[in-house]
Image (cartoon, rainbow, N blue to C red; front, side, top):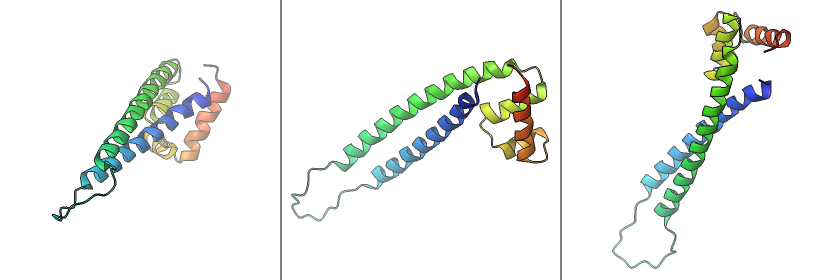
Length: 132
């Protein structure tokens, strides 16, 4: 498992979060679209704001599903790799960081390291000396 593979899971999580936020914004905008009823005839444009918004939401949901599927596959691969780590402290650190997507500071707090930097350096030293 390369560092690039491990970072890919983190990047996928960020993409998923952004897509979820975009979908929520579009839903809010779609709910806010209401016709202006003045009683006067209106021959404005033929843009269907609700329909266009719904199409955009469906497109984003499709992309979200694809990203979630890719993340799931990546996490299965990472989990299998982590299971091969003999050192239980390093397994815990790897699970916190790469499976759960925690920041180095969160990993340091939950694993008992003084700082985020010390947790990260411990991981880097472990990766450098081990052949997994």
